[in-house]
Image (tube, rainbow, N blue to C red; front, side, top):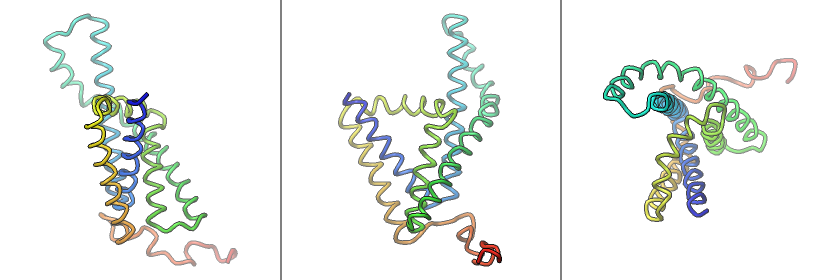
Length: 197
């Protein structure tokens, strides 16, 4: 029970850190999270294929390593549709969070933070997210087993989250590689039809 609770706390801290990073660098970090999800899903597909081969054949063979290496490009291509679906799921949830942030009058920084956390949770829990969760849990399990590594990882995630949150609140988001806010060039006339005003 203690290990599971530590894992949950660490995942929440990591979600906040990822959300704060999205708020600080919306385009770059969102793209980075999708890239990480794609690589994790590809690795999970490759591991599943290797495990299935071992189950059918029995013990490992000398050519398993080269075979895995040669199959890597196929697993990268194979994981693209699922990753795109997962990313669209996350974007849909993040859009809902943005609308709620607008409805409750949150500032841009806090709305982006909510969008970033929601997008991260969408990548974790959305359709096909099992192939993201599996590799991450294999890394987290040894960390959460002992108190000292768990505490160090949690403090690191919380520190990164706090620094990014304070930075985006103080300086605003960095929209690189774009020049500015995506709606900065639009006026009210562009957003609201004449008959509605």
